[in-house]
Image (cartoon, rainbow, N blue to C red):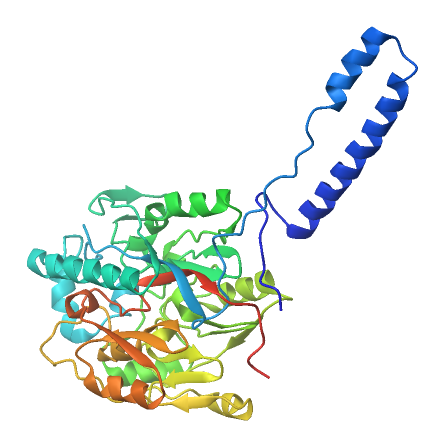
Length: 423
């Protein structure tokens, strides 16, 4: 199968047809002009010859810098987030629904303020080292712009300070040569896209498609203001009933609730991704891609990649604490289901925005190399048994901001082709 190549300025087929037509048109016009010159006066002939002899050059074809169809092809270019200036989101209803009760006092104290400064400095240093290791592995690393997230903004429906640009996986999804800029669901992340716009515009100018779904107003109607969530049991019951803090008032989704396997993309309805958002994506990506809804026994669903992480063709890490309700359809398709070992992260390490299962939130550099937490020795052994080399990096302090290696990155370009892996 030929790798997709993108011509600067739009559709490959349309541009190719336009180019061929232009070249043929110029050739015919040139022949006619030369015939006319032979019967014209010398002065007229000289003038027309000057026009005919203008060089006809074919526009240079340029390979699109954005091209990724799955989570495991050879990684060539990646966006890595920034911890600089990161702020704790205000303790609003949508944030409360996505966090654990043991950390609610942290949000009440720090909401709208910087994350603890010493912790943040360590996170910044860890991510810089992660970038250096990616470069050493042959990957081009790009970064979002530093932004002052303390500034408060106001729309007709709400006001909020910002949060961060730490997790590009949450806001950017690459499907083929298209960058999809997720609308998001937290008010503190409404303007997060601004940190990535210089990069996106650069990719667009070089031939990538750029899509921005409808931006939600994030008015009060988008959230269940009375959402009950005092216990894990409450959350389990609500999730089983299909009730979440986000309503169906308007489409919303985070890109990290989707995970790609060629022509098949899997998504969960979560606290930040509603059915309207999923349906928007399904219609937008059809007919080239199939969007499948999956669900899990998860009291707090938010982002799929620490629950169900596809790491190779027909190979998926499935969180044993959050079993997939549709797992049989993957088994029938011949997929290998791997249950990762329990995380080793200590109980006293702060995880303000996530669970310990960031241990399985890994980044595949190709089918045989994986970036994984240096402290998770049991998962190292699991990958070794799968014949996959582990690239060990420690980002424990960066984990506290809500993500592992997959969350902290968005793969811009992987060397591969569009294929079907799910039958």
